Length: 241
Image 1 (spheres, rainbow, N blue to C red):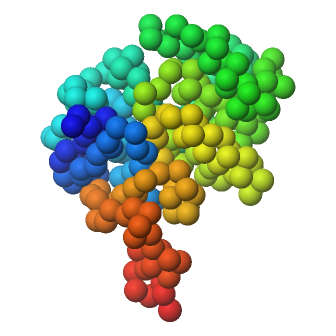
Image 2: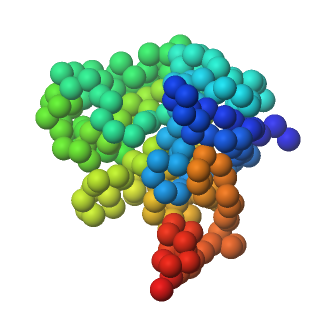
Image 3: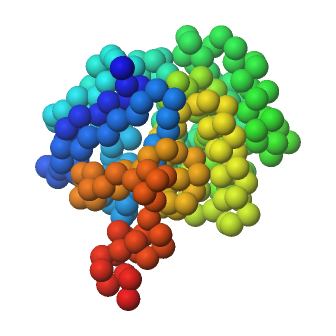
């Protein structure tokens, strides 16, 4: 069986500092996965390596059976592997409608772009209401909605979300989480980086715990940890006391 994504023994880093140490994950057809673990241990670096924003020093990345290791980001986007990175990466002086329309720049995304735009507005009514506003005038949660909306305009065959609810108020986090769950229900496979394990398990079939640039544990719904175990996973044995 061809896996949708197969990452094997990836090593990567910045300058002389290695961040990923032989990390391997996979996604089978029809499933979504979550990544969690302490900050600064390689989760965002992994997504950058997969999406072509940085080149691994060794290892392989295959998408739908095709080796994409080291390919440039436009070619990876054209294949349908889409990355919504952490933080505000939008063009602040562009209007919401312009930003979403520009996101469908690839040949495969151009077909059906008008229909997807209406689907994005239906998923995020706030964006529809503010479609003439500049991106820099949006709140943090609204900018995150726009970032995910742009990713959806790319017609993803696999969508990678890097901490989409980071720093949001409880109300906005709940709103955005509901939208991500709806994306999942529509059949878009996801790779989601988050710290909320319960949220991840509601979306995905399997989780990977990433520490020190490698996978140290794989979790599925049948062996999900309780709260005490989550504390131990994050903080060690003392976290349970």
